[in-house]
Length: 270
Length: 194
Image (cartoon, rainbow over all chains, first blue to last red; front, side, top):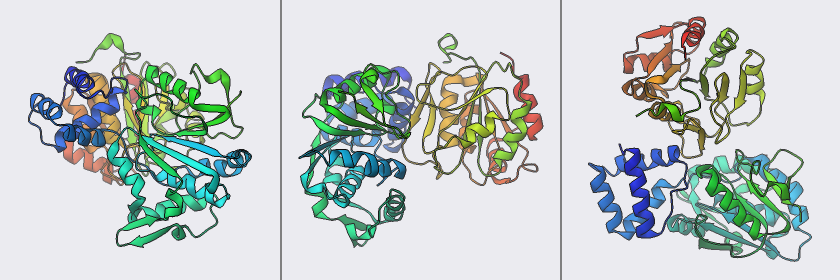
């Protein structure tokens, strides 16, 4: 087990060595995942762990992939997607061109979900979906659009609950254990690494989705990231968070109003 | 290890349960004293529909405050925190709550093991872990960690539990000495002083 002071030292070493700043991450969850990595990789002690971490960039990327949470599914929280379909897309439809940012997109399931509902609303052609994550490896998976077949039953159920009326299996080609999603969906996606901790605003969007990312950050980092989103949203744009995340208590809260049903979507007032 | 002064409450009770545990909790909750000087966290396996039905049901049976745990909630004495569906619930060193949407553990999210072991790291000997009825092996590892950190572990009597597997498994793996029925469990919680 890694002692709390060892973890703190490691985070500072990583920051100095690689420029990745995990010091604003909530410790309980981070400790759990670093510890699981430590055990899985069979390190004998902290010194060996630290040395390995700092000697190889490739190994460090592997570490980042393992300790960041990359668990996601398509149409996760179907009620949220139903709200996007019914309340948000009709507003976006009035724009000549739609720019959406998935911040912390992980392996991309939510980006493909978004592309599907845009397509069904006839809006995909005039949309561009920016999908970013700090983790290079997951972006490669997202870009490929290939997902485990074992997930498709859950994805398909979620799709139906989100108000989907098509045959979900029409969106992919089954290939042994994998489902390859239609290229017409990914044509409108732009993938790029972006670290919410250290990178700045890079465009203006009508909709930003960042779901189940802020829960891993401490209050100070949450506040900084919300300011970044605020700078990256058009006036009257929408910000969508995870089901246990909120703008409540944040400095930008006065400039946003939550949409009427209880989904975690806020609209910028001006 | 336990930095007593830094936390908002000094002692914590964490209750884990799966199928059949609702009945036990509905027996226990009305018996809890209104001036309970502890934090109480409940981790239940349940379906993923996020609604307030469970919170309302519990609140109707106790004079304590019942709420679904939000991230960064600061534990308060006399409040019962319910782990939200589809998230693991963890404890921070300052006694605040964290949520984690990472992979299921023992096919469960929330997982009882995750909360038990995280709470043990913060509360050490000031933690009491109680495991109720269930058909899953979740909780047994967490109990071992609570015990290792000097905490107290108590299990619902498998003879009384609607589904005996989970409490029986925890007893078998951890050499649990304190095995009680739901009514006695409530008395035990009431007897933990500050």
